[in-house]
Image 1 (cartoon, each protein chain N blue to C red):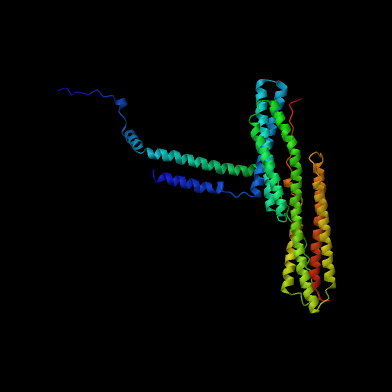
Image 2: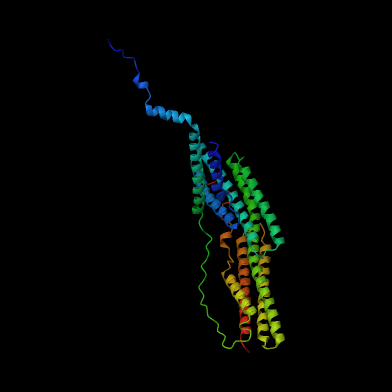
Length: 127
Length: 266
């Protein structure tokens, strides 16, 4: 008895793995959406960080802060101290005046970084 | 999905908050200004190249490019001035020694200027020809003459504010020392005449410092929008403020002498 061989189109039969994959994908579109959203989020965040860093890089630090000139601290020794040499109020004032001295010496009285920008005004289209 | 989406949104806001929520202070305003200034310089180079190409070839394409580059450059110029004035405004807010009245007046003037350049920038979008842009640039140039006066006067106020602050601090120290010297004089266990002379000298230096500052303010007040040497006038005022500062240094050094005198036996 001859055996009947049914006509089969083997090319169109999906592989088992493909079937499973299709099933998984079709069953959970939620993951595709979450994946896309997550990807976009990461791109946005990296762009924000990149541009904020770039902004910092582009800007030249024109505001130079001069290093304080080293001063030779001469200890003024008082050979004959008065009764007020150890007075707490006097010592406190001495410290405050010293601090103020440093502030006055290191003050920037030019503020060169704040000078008006150099701009080209009144343009013309003539040779 | 209901669990993932809120978590993702939450993480977005948590991570983005430090970037978006930066405190706006002078440093930030100054960085904005420098950033815009760099943008302007780039657009200015593009403008020069486009202008040269247009003047050489006189084609429609080169004309359109020139129009586009000029518009961009002028918009950036407006933005540079706006951010510069904003940086000055923030500097005023953070400088001690400027009175509330001075602050209020300058804020008002600076805000008006910022607003003018904002409107000017918006108006550039409607410019359709190169002639429109040239005319718009002329308007900006005229306005900038007034802006320059305001910027130099603002810079002068900032530097004067610093001087006022130091002078006030020195004055407070003089009053403290006067009190202490009075106390010593009453006790009678030390001669205070030399200390008092040093204090008097310190007060004299404060007066001279004030005079030099006043002279600087006079120079700044006389700057007019029509002056072509505004920068020179500002430099003169700045020099006068440096002299004022020198007197403050001397005044404070005399206070150190007073302390030394108090601590030394007769």
